[in-house]
Length: 366
Image (cartoon, rainbow, N blue to C red; front, side, top):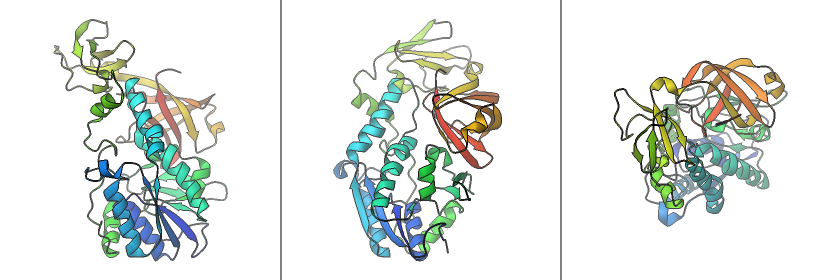
């Protein structure tokens, strides 16, 4: 049976419920452990627009599923309308990032600006001693401050998406699934008799369940599909495109130009509406600069460049790099070996083996 550190036996805990298997099992484990559970779901979409869209979360069907779990396990469940906040803080940011030639990670922004920030406030208002989520990460408490670590199952690890969690938030959060594999979570769902035990995981960006983000950006931002030139590294025009939002750094397929050797998207120039292509070796980056750094370790440790590991995409394993803290919440990351396909707008997360040290957003300039 799972127990939470620094939470009173039988004390009140809030559980962030998305309507999926993971958060539902987290809630059920808390009930089983004897805590007073309060479920909270954020409605991020209009019910009528999103209820039948496969792959979406925090919409009609998922809200219904969360409420069904709460009813079965007999604890109160609240739904908070966050459509306006989500639109401003996540969707608008996503659109603007693509318009600036970046590759955003909206799930991180959602955790940072919507879910954790406001859910924590609500949980405290409800008298909860902790906020529990279904994320696959581990939290270790010591005599000083809580630490964030990768999940035991690295294939399910979600620490990359939680690097922006502040120390204050981490001290209040709990992650009961971080020590188990997904198969074990589903076994618990079946054991508890939850109707969502076989519900599939969300695969796409939640507000673009079809994966067609370009059409969403074009709909919300006139001019997003303005044509422009595709050029090589010397500026020679090789062809035309129908909007830079259709391209990402490192892309090879679908460029619409032919050459004697394979070409990749090397950079995007939104002001000139140009897509720059070149050979694979041109993608190599020896270092990157990172902005809006959130430290989960003492920044003084990074005043001199020190070897750790970093992760520049959610699907990649951490690689060796030195990290040096700079002023104004920035950092310089020098890779032990050049990295390929590095894109502004992606997160760069810092690790010391399994411990998350912090991270920030890759930017084009220092």
